[in-house]
Amino acid sequence: MDFLELVKKRQSTRKYDTSRQVEPEKLQNIVEAARMAPSACNAQPWHFIVVDEPELKNKVADAASARLLGMSHFTKQAPVHILIVEEKVNFTSGIGGMVKDKHFAYVDIGIAAAHICYAAEAQGLGSCILGWFNESKVRKLLNIPENKRVLLDIVIGYPAEGLRNKKRKPAEEVISYNSYPQ
Image 1 (cartoon, rainbow, N blue to C red):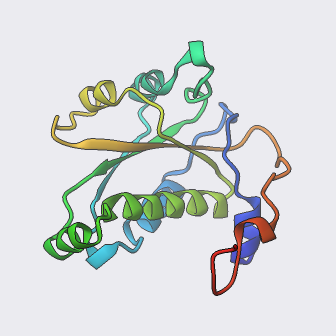
Image 2: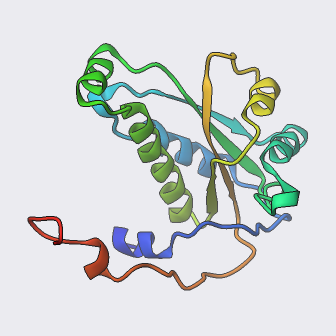
């Protein structure tokens, strides 16, 4: 499958096959893809925590679920959670970020998250990136120091449903060449 095909196929999976576990070699490929993601000044401002132990995974899923709001109620179905913890950037990325008024670590972590999702999809797995979770609860469950930010929780597993139609804005609405549209 070529890359554009992979991109068109990848979707946020919100229903997982609870009878199937993710094979260790597939999980290893996913985290290796994340580790190899590019970052500003090669800062690599991340730490990936793979949670696949069932009892702990369920506790992390509980921290990501807000049933009253209907948010992330599917997280217990997924057999794996990958938490991305923000680490300090290196000197050059930090200086560059200050000069340009950009927090490059957020961009870098977004790129790593995309690598995780595409690596999962390439191996027949589904994924969903979550930003809605109880960070302090996750921090406590996974022994993450108070001074660290847990930015994302990505759930991984085998999808229990087929592909949905992607709804995207028309290209002419979101793409221009050589100038912002007037």
